[in-house]
Amino acid sequence: MNKVILMGRLTADPELRQTQSGISSCRFTVAIDRRFADKNTGERQADFISCVAWRQTAEFVSRYFSKGSMICVEGNLRTGSYQDRNHPDVTHYTTDVFVDNVEFTGSKKETGGGGSNYSAPQNNYNNNYQTPPQQPTAPVQQPAQNNDSMSYGSLSDFEEILSDGDVPF
Image 1 (cartoon, helix red, strand yellow):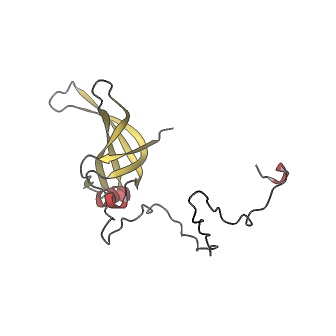
Image 2 (cartoon, rainbow, N blue to C red):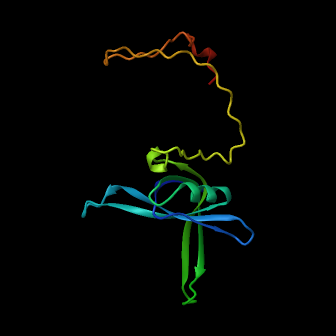
Image 3 (tube, rainbow, N blue to C red):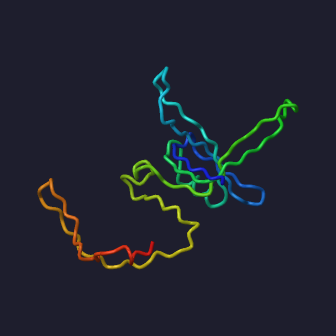
């Protein structure tokens, strides 16, 4: 299985390009902080992961993400190699994340939605489903004024199970 999920910040604005046949591609780098600080310096190290998105995902990333934006990337690792033009005996090896899906992970303010009429769309271009109709909901009980107690609503919507015989799992 080859699956990668990363969350970090873009190091620069994404670069949108098109192939000769008109297919969009977007290359960007995600900076991801390591969990622990360096023992000697006390500074946190970061890894810089190269990512490539194609087609609608590429257009989505280039339109709604910019340098410093928080991003969550889902995809797979791809390795490659190429010969150095100046030194034919030198081979360079590459590792990129080929992006299948991206998500906003920052606050509305960070993604451009705060303080303006703009709200970034959800990344649902791959989804071919329709949202189900909204069901009327029961009124929510307000919690008591005392901060020490909480109201959990009505338990009358649940039935009591007396034995495990009726449980389907």
